[in-house]
Amino acid sequence: VQLQASGGGLVQPGGSLRLSCAVSGLTFRTLQMGWFRQAPGEEREFVAAITRTSTSIRYLDSVKGRFTISRDNAKNTLYLQMDSLKPEDSATYYCAAGARVIVSALASASAYDYWGQGTLVTVSS
Image 1 (cartoon, rainbow, N blue to C red):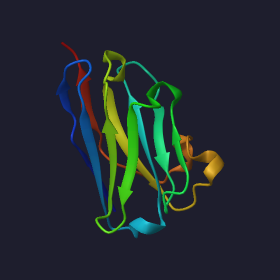
Image 2: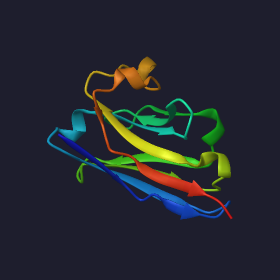
Image 3: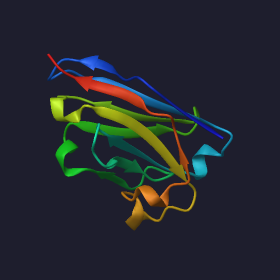
Image 4: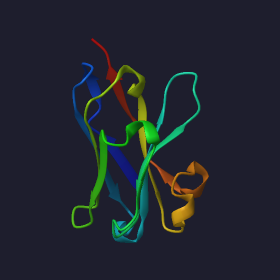
């Protein structure tokens, strides 16, 4: 089982990045997927989640209208489009997967079984 996150980097405030998470070793279309982030010295924080058929999507309030989560079940890949980035968005971003995550628990890190290695996003001028 492998979740490979990529797409992080250094970007100026107001800029954009697109994160990807390629999943292998699991049947992607059966998985609920999420993005979480963790800044140095902070707790891991929910960012966004999407159900297996994209019928339910959840966002952290502070990223609503700026971030868009999506998935391509044919490519076994999860995405996070991040626009209008702010310095407070700086963190390591992790993708997470779980086959048994109920909709009410999409924002709960403990509900997910598999995690990627993280990709670092730094928003700074």
